[in-house]
Image (cartoon, rainbow, N blue to C red; front, side):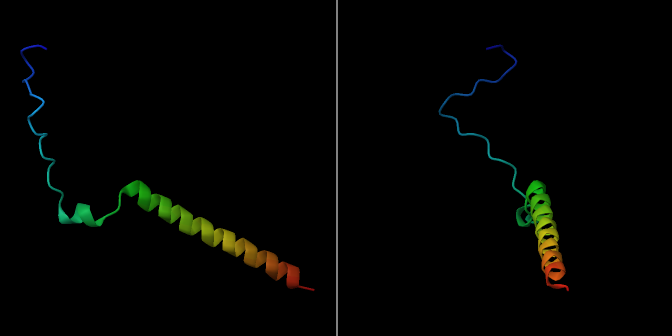
Length: 60
């Protein structure tokens, strides 16, 4: 250990993380939001494709 780094004993508590603001606590992480958006769009495209198949299958 060099002299530039402070010594922390194993019994010292870990430093507390910075408190989050109200806006950060209410929002989901961005990757989760993007993933949910992609899933919702994908499900709607898939449902539209099924609707098209049934529409074309019922046409005479």
